[in-house]
Length: 313
Figure 1 (cartoon, rainbow, N blue to C red):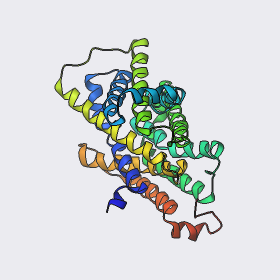
Figure 2: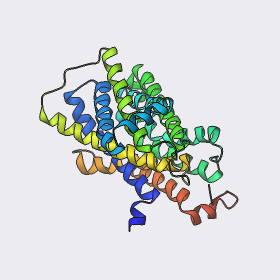
Figure 3: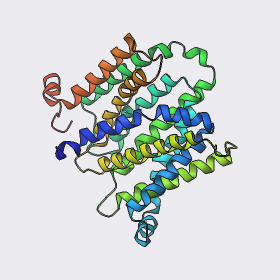
Figure 4: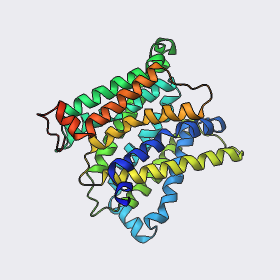
């Protein structure tokens, strides 16, 4: 049982389930604090501080941060500041379904960047077909919103560009972490320090762009913020630990992110009044699930792609 709970597939699925659960608390929190950058900054700064005791705050902690300062800054920028800054700003300019579609295509951007930058993480026919099948599923899920895209106006272009920046930042951030030698770098210190710095930079951006607001007094906001911090801590710790595993390829790990819209739709149907399944959402979910089954179920992949390197994909 312990082997299953700590396996890469199980932890990746749980992480994606948590990521899919951020929409509702974020939406609630923005009703109290309407500055997206400030909300993101508060969430990730607090998450980094929460992780400090786990990382062993003390002289050794700060020596590690000083020794690996350039790495901490790069990870903070690409895994927190740019990633979530672009996401929180972009989602305000787009229909939620279109924003979710672009963000859910992150595995495609990771695969392309890994093919270019990571020596042993290349495209294979199986990987390409699985990604294309998943993207078709994403388009089908979002089709009702896409047909109305022309009505969204010029702001939608800015929103799309911001979401693409989010995807590229996520891809590069994942590759940076996957290349770290964790025999010399404490992953707990790196995670805590980059979240703290990334959150602080988001708050600085909020203040510098005039998007700063007094914190609300309502207790509901702080309960929601606590949920968001918990999700941020849990997902960052788990995902970084998976990226640090020597047997894990960054592009293959990110394939699991295609489950996020599946989990998001299921949660919406269960929790949001008036959100019901339709032919597009069900068909899209089937295609997304099929893409993962094809990619990770080796006998099935070998049947369709006998010439591919299915042992390492």
